[in-house]
Image 1 (cartoon, rainbow, N blue to C red):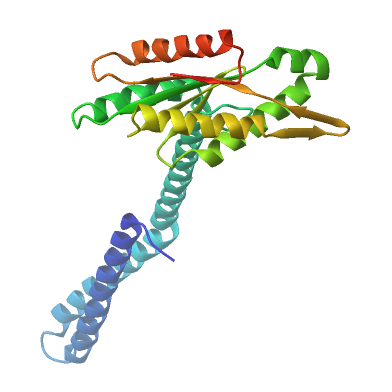
Image 2: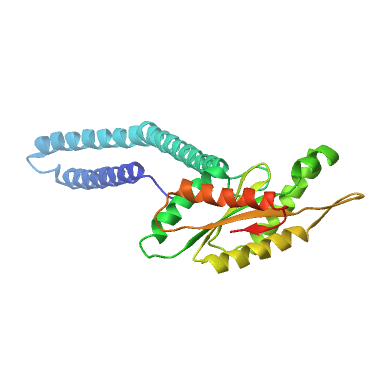
Length: 259
């Protein structure tokens, strides 16, 4: 059992008082033995004083043990409760922050996280002159899936695609759901050719998915727009360039990558 500093100090106080009491009792015993000499009256008076001191010390110990210590112990317990409450609130704050940066349906990072991460990647990779690729992925004809099969099936499709993206990406890639059926990947340290090859693997993997729900078997395809940072443009400009390529992929017939 661990003691609070105040409790430890109190125990030291009790030990000192006890030592003083023992010393006083010893002196009282010695004076009792000397009480037979001619100065016996004075010595007897001193003995009574020492006895009174002993009574006071005993009273102090009694008061400290039954009044002071319970108050200290109560304060320690209250501090412990406050500390536990603070830790709980801190943990809850972390949980809320995580929730604020996570998509509730798929468990992926959300748009807010993506925006912050993209800016941070550009700031970090700019000075070392390494490429940062951006991939925007949009599921083709997703509205028809919701309209035909219902939003529950649509949600299952989104979860399956999310799992696919997480499996194909690297640990340092940022994978986020931007909203609806649109996803984004920040792929650092990939040049144009590397990013195109990476995007083709993802497009093929998504088109190979089969979402099964009872007797329903759904296949889904994705259009992908790519852009590699030129080292100067802002995060918003880079996003707009990749988004323009996404619309180009849609216009060319979907289920393709445009860079």
